[in-house]
Length: 414
Image (cartoon, rainbow, N blue to C red; front, side, top):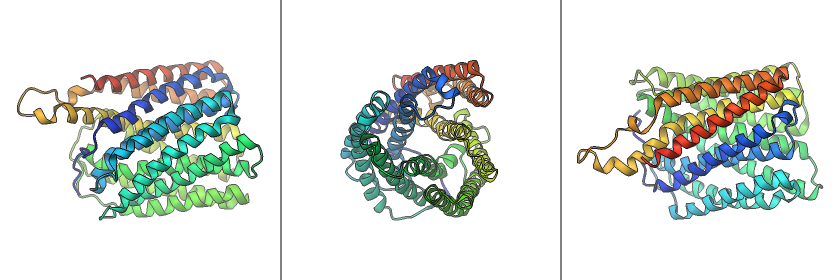
C-alpha cells in the first residue's frame, strides 16, 4: 500500500478554523479544571463546572478538531470531494457557537443548557449529513471506510443521548436518566472518538512512518469486536446484567488490542527509521489506550463499582488516549497544511522554509514529556488523595496547553 500525503482540494482555511477554535477550547477547559481541582480531588465529577470543562474538552476541542480534520482528510483517504463544501461553514458556525453557549449554560444554569445543546445538534447534524453523502460517493470501501462510517453512526447516537440529557435537565421528567448518561459517555468517548482515531490511523501511521506492503486484515476483526463490545456495554447500562457488561468490556479490550497489533505491524514495515517526536507521542497514546482498556476489564471482573475510580479511569482514557492522540497528530498536520498553502507553489522557484523549520521538535519533546508526567502525577494524586499534587499537576497541564496552543497558532504566522 502507498501512503500519499494529506493535501486535498479543501480550502485549508476551513479545517484550520475548526482547529484554532479547538485549541482555544482546550486551553479554557484546562483553566476551568485547574480552578476546580478541589472538586476533582473529592471525586465530584458531576458538578456544573466540571460538566462545562468536560464538554469544552470533548466537544470544543476533540470534536471540533475531529470535524476539521475530516474535512481535510476525507477527500484524501476516500478519493472523493466533500459534498457541497461551501456549506461546511454552517457546521463550523453552529457547532462552535453552540459549544460556547452550551458550556457556558452548563456552568451557570444547567436547566437552560438545552438551548446551547440544540445549536450544537444543528451543527453536528449538518456535518453528519455532509459526511454521509460524501462517503456514499466513495467507490472503494476500505477498512478506513468501515471505521469512519461506524464512528459517524456512534456520533449520531451520542448526539441523541446528549440531547435527551439536556432535555432531562430542562424538564426533570425524563426516565432512565442514568442509563442515558452512561450510554452517552460510552458511545461518545469509546465509540465516536476511538473508532474515528482507529480509522484515520490507518492513513496517518503509514504516512508518517513511510510504511508499505502491510496487511490490514486485523482491522476487520478489531472493528467487529469493538462494535460488539460497545453494543454489549450499552445494553448492560439498561438491563443491569453484570456478565453482559463484562463480556462487553472484554470485547472492547480485544478490539483495541487487535488495532494496536495492526499498528505495530505497520510500524514494523516502516522505511523511516527515525520518527518525528510528535508522531511517536501518538503511537505512545495507542499503547496507553490499550492498557486502560485492559484495566477496565479488570475493574469489571473484580466488580469495582466506585464512581470515583471509574471517574479516574475515564479521565485517564480521555487524556492519555484521545487527547494525546490528537495533540500528537496535530503537531504534524497543522505545519504541513500551512506549509502547503504558503510555500508548495514556490518550491524550486525561490528559497522556502522546509517543513522541519515549520515545527519545533525540541519543544515537542519537552511539552509531551511534561504533559505525560503531569497526567501521571494527577492520576496518582487523585488515587492517593494528595491535594497539592492534583493542584500542581493540573496547573502544569494548564500551562502546557497554553504553550502548545500558542506554538500551533504561531505556525500560521510563518
